[in-house]
Amino acid sequence: MKADFLILCGGLGTRLRSVTGETPKVMAEVQGEPFLDFLLKYLIRQGARRVILCAGYRAESIAAHYKAKFSQIEIIFSVENEPLGTGGALKNAAALVKNDHVFGLNGDCFTPVNYAKLLAFHQARKARATLVGVRVEGNKDFGTLVMNDKDEITAFKEKFVTDEVQYISAGVYCFNTPIFDLMPQGRFSIEYDFFPKLIGDGFYGHKVDAPFIDIGTPERFEWAKAHLNEMTEI
Image 1 (cartoon, rainbow, N blue to C red):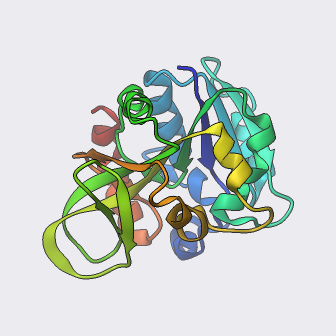
Image 2 (image 1 turned 60 degrees about the vertical axis):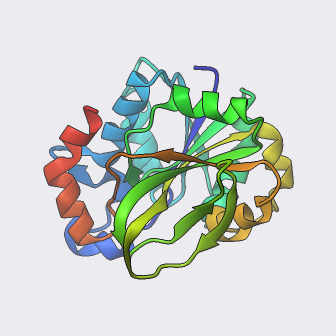
């Protein structure tokens, strides 16, 4: 697949420290392997050939593990010398990108996305950026995406309690490489500081009806340990 995959791996995993200690969040073991291993294996099956790991906290341990781990893909490391946030980490890796399209992923989340379909959706709409929205029934833990009948993202809603069907961000996005030029320097959040500025300018939501997990809390981490294998087989 002619696209680079940028995976955000810099999280401290503060809320997981009670169960994982000082281990970087993406390296937390699920069924005997780091969570990131499951994600990379899924991406390989999806056709990924070039992956950039955006690392910060304990980057050396992540690099040591993946230096020669998967022969099927090229793994490149982009290391933050200081915390840059999710947006700053992506911007920091821009010089390493070789393809015209980029997939961005949160390394502590997983949903079984068909990346070929995501790219086709993105290109068919001549989008600048496309964010994957996962369908959920009832929601109190995540912000939601508001989309019109053309699949354009028109707003982001903060967390609120509801029993209705909503679409939440899967932590997966596709964008054209010129987007990097619009990003500021330094530390910023891709979700809160950058994406809202793209509304009304070629910014689309790709809806999927699939399982979603993030391992940000001990409760979600325990759920992932029980269910991740069945999710990656979809």
